[in-house]
Length: 101
Image 1: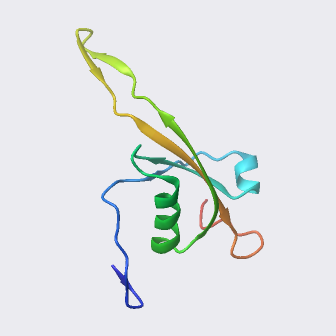
Image 2: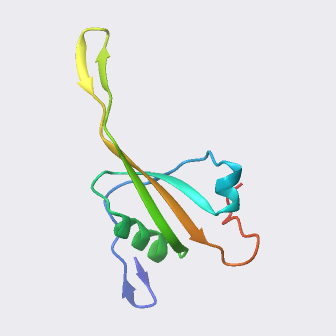
């Protein structure tokens, strides 16, 4: 992608926005993303700033290990590891909810 002559490189990883938000998260402009474990706080902040044009105040992350499961009660397998990121955004105007319903 090109924006004003600057080259923006997009990551090959997928980030997912969680739809569930508590009242505290709405008041503090916090959003929850599910990101790959290899993505750092800085990379997520840079991605949200450059691609989605939002100002990020703070990023907190938590690592989760994939669960051990069984398929048909016999064949064990492991789900993928993942990381949860809590992102606090700086509102553009007073009362801005960033288009989130």
